[in-house]
Length: 84
Image (cartoon, rainbow, N blue to C red; front, side):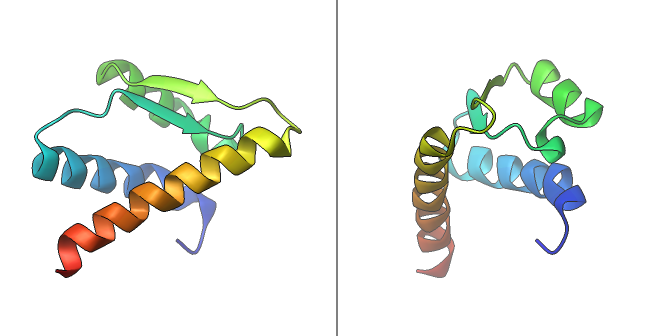
């Protein structure tokens, strides 16, 4: 992504892709407290799809690191699924 305002649309695409391939719904999303995850559209999407939002504490880089490592793992799995 080039801009943070792309997060909503990219997550929507990611969600559709993952759920279609795995046949499982996304149940939770862990993210930092960045504004891109706090938009009304993002909140409404999560509420509508019953996705539990787990926001890390602000100014807590230790927890942000855990989130970033898990996200890298997920992205790696998804990339492997589509590049084989």
